[in-house]
Image (cartoon, rainbow, N blue to C red):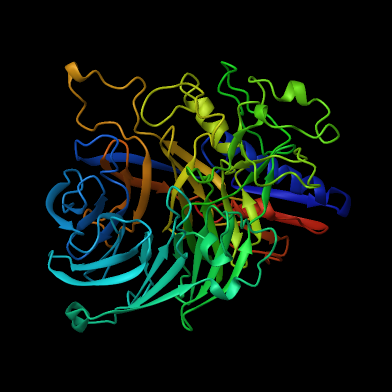
Length: 584
């Protein structure tokens, strides 16, 4: 661990300024690589688990928590219900009820709870038909059912609990001859006891006003689809002030902005591409090379985020996304192809024969809808699905920071014999050609003034934790994976807390409202059908003050070690001093 001495004098001339900046960057990087950030640490300890006993049928996908009843609500698509777990003792979660979505819908996709009201987003048996949001109170009494757009995939409340925001994906049927509109629905549920009388009205927003055209960098590519049909809302995050909803449009590699006050979609923004040809955007591209080979390749990654979270730092809203990636694969239209089966432009790819070998990038799956920039029926650029990373954006959709190759580097070090395994069996390297670890779930939480991002990996499994208090320079904290390699032998019996496979949803529970007074993280796992509770223990990074020799702080006070990653000083002499256990 890298620690600051109790006091440190920094002599800085204008010629040395850049050296100091680089030195501080190196200090922070070394700390991150050691998996223990300078001056602090964070651990996740598994304390409780509920297992449905249903494998591979999405029996646990999205969790929500109600502080008053100390209950978890977990979507169970296998049974067409939302399971209710009593976690008053978080070490022993117990099933106490199941809330059906029938007869209003066929299968739950998402659940949220606020002030005693439970909202369940559920799709119809005909996925192209309108879906529903079904409301219960936390005691399990039915309140209301509201019709929303087709395939409601995610539901959330505004921070005040008075409005519900629903992402309606509106996916086409398999023949791709019925493609409903993508929608964002706003439901006003009010406040106080009257909300439990129901009678809610839905305002279903769509994208028809954008049919005249959107930024050409936004992917509009479904056969015969209008913009409004092609845009597919996936996930929603609401700004801390409750005024704006940010909606990921995963297949379109875009972000929609919704003004909640005026109940209108105000913008659709392209997210751009990650360039894997250089820098820290590296990845393992082959499942046939019998090795871990994380390298730069001449490929672009479409971010295509699934989960999104909004958080605030010093009054500014930032967004964090888990960049899973997703391809359209239907009988009537499929965009996915392996690079070895494409004709590559000889000028853009002079070594195409070597590149297209299976052990290089030949088996990597890419889209055929982009890359032929001059329309001559060969590919001048290659675009894969997802970026195998998580990204921080500003509220206007501008990239602030990206984790690059860190997820694959970290999982390779942790599981060298099971790197890029799939989520239903131990298969070394089999996901390298197709989205790798697949960042899927994401949530954020604040502990002792520090904001943390928790990112779930759908394939190899596990949860990455970063301190994002300085959004321009997040610090990797830890990686925990409750997966067993190899899986336990059924004849020997499973351990008390079984393995988790296919994390789909995460929620953070603050200590002030948790059942045991500790910070908790809950993960729902769609393959193993398990819901797991982790206790979070964090040691806050050491606070330091930057002082002039006169004792005045010329730039900042009470910096964290993470903040120093951004600090570039002008000429002068400064004292860097701990403010905890300090001495001069």
